[in-house]
Image 1: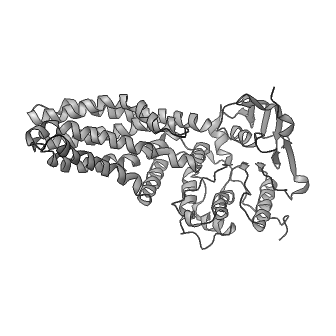
Image 2: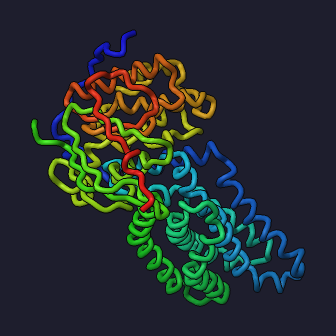
Image 3: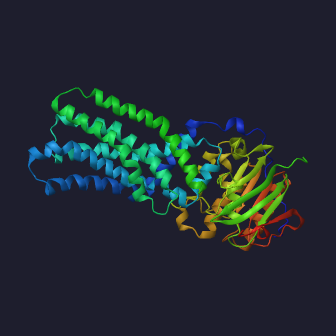
Length: 245
Length: 212
């Protein structure tokens, strides 16, 4: 075969730009891709869940098997365990895309980075935050959390964990260019997690004592809305800096 | 079509106090194949990352169709296909899934062409095999299959022939030629001797290296 054998490539289509902007489509495509990737690499999302389960099951052994004591610390233990296991999974959010060049491909594509990032964070939450929320009542039972607290527990985690994923994404994006960013992510992100932790546990305490929960949940919801609108912008900017370096 | 597509003006870049290039100017017109030459470490990849609007560690100006590439970055990215040092191929996905993701990022392209593109790069029959089961060269070919799908005017290719066999390189050369003939432009780095005769222009970075 001669190197000069002329192949025919299709002619350029004029006016490609007009049809290429569809944020909903790229969000959905990113979501599908990342969920598929997570299912093929099980350890990425199973590890944080096992960690979550282990922390909660070690507390009765380490502290005291006394139901009365356990039920008072249960809201805090479940929330701290959920927070730490989210943090544990954060580093892998952009790591593999960065290492195999997929992230570069996303950055040079004509897609709005905001929606790609949002899709990635939502899929991360679906693989960590959502299963954590579903497992939480089980942990509540293990720690003798009274039944009245279960509603507050599940609702506060359901609204709180997406915020954890969004804020953690900023830390992950900032440190993805570093060889060992793991510890740095925690240092960057933990201060920002504290308000979520405070209002999350307060919601459970309120539902335990029969006080209205709506106020705490509304604050968690406000944080979530702020995270949804602003965090993808920060993540996108951080990714551009990390790849540029 | 006398107006150049891409104009690079007085580009300066240094890395760790080492000047990679200074006062580097060249332009790329439709139908050009530009090969960036230089030793290892002379800044070829750095230059391509700057041209791909991925890196901003430079001074100087780059214009695409008369607009600075960062001012009108969406228009530039619409016209750009960038293949970096890493092929951007997900190991746990199959070649077809990898290309589908590429199509999702470039929604104006025709998804029906994926099979055709894979058979063009010699991966017919490997559509459903996860990429981690394929060889390095085959993974590279999955990345190169994007060239058959792309409608981008400017191709920036960083070492596209790494791990590709001789027949594959000849096919890729023919492809670059066909792209130039339809009015596209190619900027690439390679240590392979390009067999494209008078079509290639060369930009050498070795003369640019300095430690001042």
